[in-house]
Image (cartoon, rainbow, N blue to C red; front, side, top):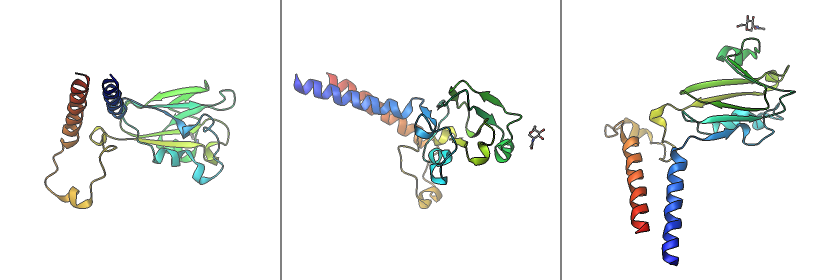
Length: 176
Ligand SMILES: *[C@@H]1O[C@H](CO)[C@@H](O)[C@H](O)[C@H]1NC(C)=O
């Protein structure tokens, strides 16, 4: 019985790991609830946080802030660069904002509060294109590998399928 439940636990852990690599994620901007504010230093900036995160199509960004004092504006690259709040693509000021990342490429956000963007309360999120989706689990290829002729463009999809079959196999054989 103990062996069975150990195997069951192991199978569930594997299944969870598999799902966590493929399911859409929700990212709390800045990694904590009070992060949508003027950064205290360059190293504290939201773009530092964004650089170490991997965003994929279907993931969502979530902001928590005081809706009476601040807002989130999705803007163009130009408006981001000049902190122009007058013509945003979308404006959110409900204090709990969720934006789904529907396509690959850069997304630009600035604070709608007077003077905040100029002081660094801004965020660029770059969503990876689908063919880069699973680079998170495989190490980055070395330059030699990139130049080599052997890498097929479908390798990551094949790897994923193999991973799924292994997980399924472990589940089935682990249980019975
Ligand atoms: C902000 O953008 C709007 C619309 O693109 C433009 O008309 C306006 O001149 C800009 N304001 C500044 C200060 O650049």
